[in-house]
Image (cartoon, helix red, strand yellow):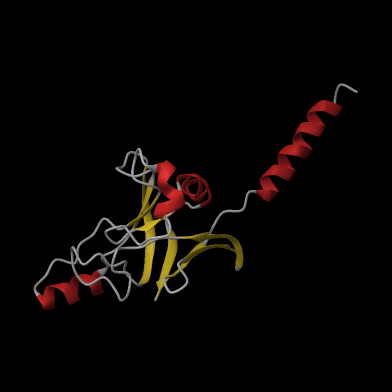
Length: 161
């Protein structure tokens, strides 16, 4: 009987660990306004998202309010942000920098997946119906909290038109 509790706790711990799947790929489809989190080829979660105020096309320069398209990496997390948590997208990559350089412009940067502007989370029921960011990918604060725990740094992200 004295061994029953430790065995039971071990069993419950194993069950909980088995259910904690980590995301190994993020896919964003701008035309659908959706973000998909994948684990081992299966969709774990789908979120409705908002983009930059000019969502069509690939980000070409700083201030164009476009969300980049292509393959990047979620390279760091920023808990202290102007928005409710943020995960940085590795834009600009070398190709983006080269194109901007040839055009004589800055490619911009600081593109993130983030929650709502600090202090305005209560407005997400309205703001998520509009493309309002400067080129980032926005979700509600509750969704950002979930994404924060599911997605590790180093996870690839593909952003499609």
